[in-house]
Length: 232
Image (cartoon, rainbow, N blue to C red):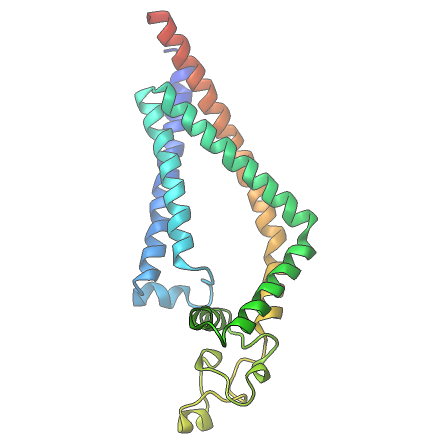
């Protein structure tokens, strides 16, 4: 194997080693939050509004893909390197499609999210599991009801009250005075408006880096195949 191919091999290996370690770190964050580690949850409080399972799944996907890249590069396995390149290409296509949809149909996606929040609120009275989900949304996003605490009348749930005042503490009940004033539907809409463009931009930027990784992988796979033919 030539000097240039060896360079590609080691660049691909160390790149994916870093990605694998980062994937494990993401899994660790998800597990820590899932297990309610007090130190970590205190640090992330107010900044982490995504379910920990999402972190675990994303970290696991990153680790598996990086594993194929690392092992394929260091073992000079044509099959593993090609599999790694295919995984990368699929992710690149998904990221580009996501970015285009967020740029093109941003308002429609926002309206769909708002309607989904409203539908969840309407179902909470008849489905206890939906009620638990909506309470979690209220706690994580510091919101209350669809459009505000008055959606519950005069007695919103405790998920609407991160800090109860004198009256609420006395009667052990969240009150409209103590409840978060913002409704969850507008909060979700504002959150999407704030982050849709940055997320789409980051997706495009990461896709560009992944394209370089895929090209390196395909170059290495081609070199491995040529070497196998030469010594066959």
